[in-house]
Length: 304
Image (cartoon, rainbow, N blue to C red; front, side, top):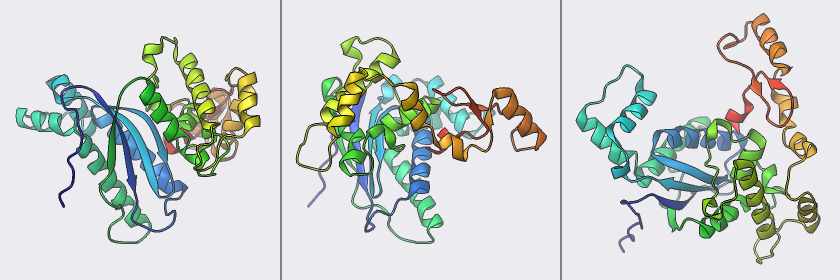
């Protein structure tokens, strides 16, 4: 029986909820695997003409919410900029290459093919295996902007809670809310509209707070599948009007205290890095840990 064609809108920006599951038994993706998959999402998200709205990387599958731009919205200069970013500033694509890349880098199927194939090569090499990693082809659902998109994003971010991995979605560093709050949306990987632009909320901080409120209220509802957010957790968030306290931010950033190599003021970290002759000490500035007043030698957010 032939496979049903994908529902793709190629003449306007369109949002897709994409899901892909491994063919392996159990939960084969460990922390390092999920770190690498997220790094690849960053890589290809910057290469393709798309916006990453959300994600959840689980032990045997992943969810991605992505807005793809159509080829007709991309001009030659846009393609050239990304070509040089990928292949070097001295490279010069010809007209045939530009048109081919315009079509490729606006294609959801090509985005997913590169992402999954690149991760498969990494996974098989790291785990000394051969053969198929992914199950059947990825699933994709076309999502309307606005309230439908927010609900879909909440569904994705609640995956680690439903699975019993964490009590709160922001405690899981491989989902979009965790990435926003633990890394401060490092490298601007994620868009910050949350599909809520039409609500006229205001700045990014307010939008994040309203999205967290929506997520918590949704996550407290028992839909008969998986865990829910505990009432006491929701009550505490309501009492704080879904604002994050210094204590909340401190707790979410405890990893910086154990894995950073050096922490302290910007001048302290830079001086000690140079003293020990650490790689990149001269060219790279220390990483500011958002929400807490210190700097780090390592850029841990790159490994989230």
